Length: 296
Length: 257
Image 1: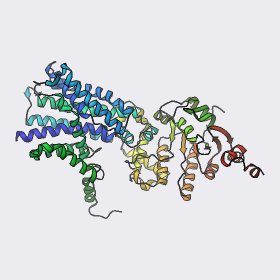
Image 2: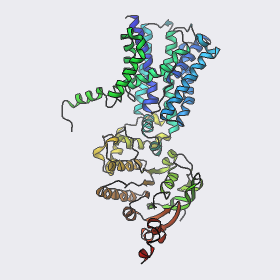
Image 3: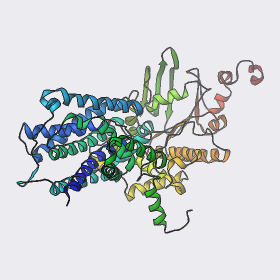
Image 4: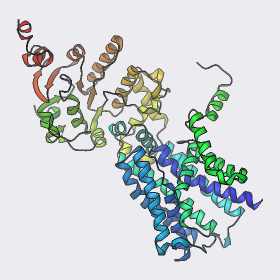
């Protein structure tokens, strides 16, 4: 397969994993986050440092990456217990800038030069690159999707849905806002961490600007376009926003304009996202499953 | 007497800055009893209510439920002890269907557990139990409608059903009758009496006097944050303090005759 297409596929797969994590926080638990790239970055930097400085292989460092991003996600979830909606959005933007600055200015993290020389992932001695790396990403994507799907079927997911709809009413049926919001944050950020580790080992060079605020906005855009709170929305969103810039490569300078237009169109025409509740995919499916019968 | 009471407030007060919303209020609610909590606007009814359900912490005094002190506990813990509540302005889970609203409440024990909340919620069993509860309140036909699409009367029933799904021993109803048509009111009264028969204590905040008088076994009346009367509806109705609170002093000589 063409390595150009494989590369795009890898980015779409990694973004799908990270956006699935964002979906748990924003789509399921209703806690707006505009700083998700920070956790993507924390995952990537943790993996990079463990690989270059401690010489650990990807497979050993992966659980450490998950734990570290999860714990930091837990800490960063704490503001969500006090501030909500727009204020939470602004707080998470702040978190993103702080984390980015940390990577940029602390010499341990390579400063402005970033971290280079990250080894490839080895699978029983064979280094993965190109198509085999895509396969690895897809395996992780399947796991992420499964977790994301299971979450909608488990009590903790239902608890998050009730929190998203009405926090006070949720408390009166025994849902602890603290417990389940933090659970959503930990799971969501841990998924971002996995994506970050894959990204670091694929790019083999990372720097702070890869995880800045615009990346967070792009991730949220992917989620909104695909459909918040749906299992498949993150993949569709990541695919659309991953492919479009390639198709419109001549217009690269206007990429942000393109995102903004697309986002506005989705918000205007498909407020729940393309796979969302009132999106055209669901209404088509419904019409199809009714077999042309008239609605009651 | 004290041991029998399901809910007991002891000298409860709540201040918001310089405002005494509730001042030194004590009353108790026995098992299988409907206690009406009435009073003019701003009397402190909802504040009282919120202190029982955990939304507010009293500045002074104690609240006991089955002999256990509950004031100051978080809302979800109070709920899991067996107190269900509804809201004056309805708060269903709008994005979930009526059935899912009830199923969500059935998870109360799982939410408190350490790991059980990873289990599947959408099982045949929870569906069946939730449908039974919906049937009890007369909403079975709307089970698969999004709660956001239901009219107000049905939403009030849905909230009661959601509270019942917690298997509460005490049900707090905050103005469940406001904004309902006459026939809706009648149906809801019947439902509340049924719930009482099944062995649940009910604290009823109500503006509609006819309904409150008809349903309550006993009543307590608040005015300007203070308890001004308590007793049977008959007694409360003729209490000069209550008449004064609602109608003012000038009317006294006519009413007294």
